[in-house]
Structure formats: structure tokens, C-alpha cells
View (cartoon, rainbow, N blue to C red):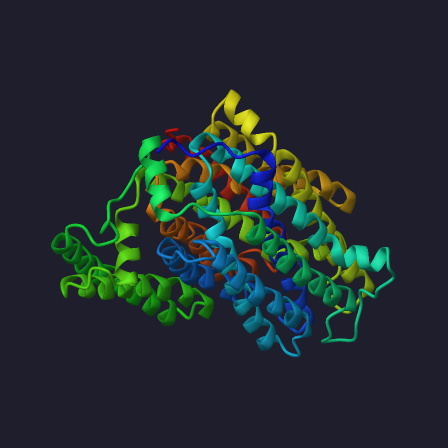
Length: 502
């Protein structure tokens, strides 16, 4: 069999179009959930802990969905069944979320909504690896970045558009979600379902046999039948069991320190996470020792243990990049409304005008990302993917830090250009670099595991940013954005140590 044929522009367009809807969901979530939490009575330092459901859900869901989609093949295809199931569930969650009567209901709906979005999103990353030859993958991920940016432009600005163009109120009585936000989520649900349905209908998938033959022809990593099992089980089980006790012990010691010194409870998320990782290694080690070599949990932990070198290097870059992004998503509304608009009163017109402007700012950075997405492959071809990503991350870090020095809301749009450049690259370059280092029949699993290095920094951010903002930053959320900018600079340095082999 020959290599995978090159797909046309419109074929790549169709297979990526579903990301337009997925980003409607994520953009509405990122731009409005903190606002919903504050409206329902959340204190500023408690917002990160309420967001914890989103990254924890991704940590659990993405490798599971990736592993399941790797091993699925039916008349609907390999990845497309998951696109559709996720779209149905996420659309329902988007309708329910802005009608949450209490804070705890909103926090629960965030969990359900994020999990549903992840069911659709994770297989899309592997979809590019499945469908495109290696020389088209940068363009494929760039097309996804374009749709992510385009969808987020509209979704982020929806409350502002509905208020200023259609006269729908952006204020409501205390404890009630404004109508402009509610209608935005309804429109987002319709867009999510429709866009994913378009990709499902317009795109056909290669069978597992075709994928294997194409990978052999392209000289890409291929695992033979049975390659999903654990290799060197005795060694792996011994390593897992030994290391599990180390991680569990570290988690317990840190938890005791937090308890003994009376540190804030959200820090238990960090210490508990280390302990849970140790428990997962212990369970996996026991499964492997008992000869249960096809257990899904054990396989995912084994693949994490044996992940390719390029993936482990990119993990560091992803960690610092996504810590910065999560700080921005959590605290931009609080930072802008207080630092620039000078108010913390969620019922005031001034606060809601500032919150609407944050939506516009998010629309601008996503819009710029959509434009830059098509330039990234050109820049990468003339330089390298690593250099392109480094420059983009530096621009993003500068954009975040510049918010501290701004007093005129209009100038925030300049900051958003740097953030948009970084966002476009974060959504494409790491995946384009990674895809060529992965075996074809493990693409979904490894893309899911790669999500660990997006989720772990988000969990860390949710654990410590509330503590930092309250006890170190004196309640000034803008310093959390500065910290995010520094984190993005660190990511820019570490990307130059990544091995990128075409």
C-alpha cells in the first residue's frame, strides 16, 4: 500500500469543522463560568477550586476515550462515534448550565459539561494523525486552530453582541444569571451539535488495516497485533509497585504538612493528586503482576511509563503553557473589573460592562489566533516548528504581563494579540511535533495521555492560585496574570530542548 494520499483543502476543512462547535462550548465556558460563579455568590479566592472539576474531568476522560477510540471500529467509524456522543451530551449541558439555581449546581454542571466536551474533543486530535500524511499534519492542526479561533471569537463575544446589537439585558437581580449569558449558551449548544454533525457526515475514516499499511509505507512507528499488551511485564510491575509507595508517601507527607501548619484546604488537591497517582501505579502494578495484561488502566499507565522521548520533552512545555492559560481563564474577569474598571460589585452595571469587555477581549485573541493559524505552517517551514512555537510563547507571555500596566480597556486589545499568537501555536505546534513520534494504532491513547500535561498544570493552578491571590497578592487578581506571563516565558525556553523529527 502507498502512503496516505494528500487531502484537499476542503477535505481538511470538513474533517476539522467540528472543532468550530467544540470551541463554542469551551469559549463560553472560559469566558463566562467565573462570572456565573461570582454571580451565584462565589468569593474571589474560591473560584479556582470551583474550576477544579474541569481539569480533573479531562485527566480522567481523555486517556480513556483515546484508548477506547483506538480500539473501536464499527459502521460509524473509529473516532466519529465519540464525536457524536460528546456533542449530544455537551449541547444538553450548555442549555442547563446558565439556568443553575445555586453555586453547587453550577460547579456540578461545569464538571458534566467539560467531561462531555472532552468526549468529542480528544478523538479530534488523533483524527488528524489518522487521516493526514506527515507532511500535511501541521496544516491539519493549523486548520483546527483556525476553527478554534473562529468559534471562540463569536462565542466569547456573544453576551456583548446580544446586549449591544439586540438589546438583551446583561444585568439581572442578585443571584440570577443575566439573559444575555443564558441566550449565549443556548446558541452555543446549537452550534456545537451542528458543527460536529457536519464532520461526522462529511468525513470517512480509514480502517485499522488501512492505517497500519499506510504507517508502514510512511516509515512511521507501527505496533503489531498484540502490541496493546504490556511489554516486559515483570520489570514494569516491579517498577510500578516500588514507585507507587514513593508517590503515596510523598502525598501523605505533604497532606500532613498542610494539616499541621493550617494551610488552606485547596492545597490538599495537589498533595492528594500525588497520592492518587501513586495509587493508580499500585493498582496497575498489581494487575500486571496478576497477568491482566489487557486491562485498560494498566495499559494507559504502561504507555505513560513508556512514552516517546519527544512526548516527555513536550510535556514540560505544555505544563508551563497551560498553567499560564488557566491563570488567564480564571482571573481575567476579576483582574479587569477590579484593576481597570475599579469595581467588585457583581450586580453593578460597571462590573457587567467590564465582564462583557473581557468576552470581547477573548474574542479578539481567538480571532487573531484564527488568522495566525494559517501563517504558522509558513513560518515553521521557513524556520522550524520549535522556533515558531518559542516566538509565539514569548508574545503570549508579554501580552499577559502587559495587562498589569494598562488602565484603558481599549489597550487590552493589543495585549490580546500576543495572547492570540501564543494560543494559535499552543493548539497546533506541539501536536504537529508529537504526531510523527507516535505509533498509528496508539494515536488516541497517547493524545489522551498527552492531555495529562495540560490538565496537571490546571489542577496545580486551581490548587495554589487561590492561595497566592489571597495571601501573597492581597486579593489583586492581576498578579495571577503576571505569574501566568512568567510561566509562558519559561515554556518558550524549554521548547528549544524538544527533539522534532519530521
